[in-house]
Amino acid sequence: MASKIDPATVESGSAISMLKTLNIHLKEIGPTFALMEVTVSDIHKNYFGGAHGGLIAALIDTVSFFPQPLLPSGKPCTTTNLNVTYVRPAAVGDLLTARAELVHLGRRMASVTVTVSNQHGKLVAHGTTTLMIEP
Image 1 (cartoon, rainbow, N blue to C red):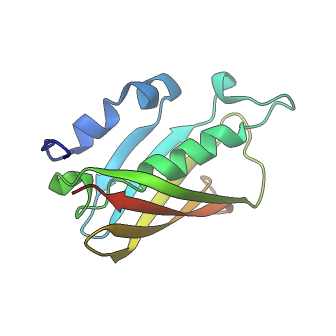
Image 2: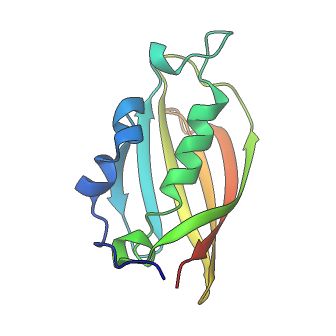
């Protein structure tokens, strides 16, 4: 049986140690959406000098938990599926914004779509997550 968790806030979400390490910031929690941002820096570079795909995958996975009905409402959940499609590379200095939209919330499962755009509004990646709501 899962233990009760404190509802997540912008502050507690941004305080997650991995997000602090990657300089990812939770910016907004909405009724069915959430926003996170990261500025691509040298710590995020892949072998070719652009943003590592793992950064974008972590961004998509993590922002999925923060629409209001999920962690901000104190519902413990875990990722059961993560699908990421990379559309264009992100370069050092790019500001990436990830927007999660809760598209389904059942008793046991939630479905979330995420878009990641750069500072010019260009789509960098999109993805979906399936989250299992813990009892």
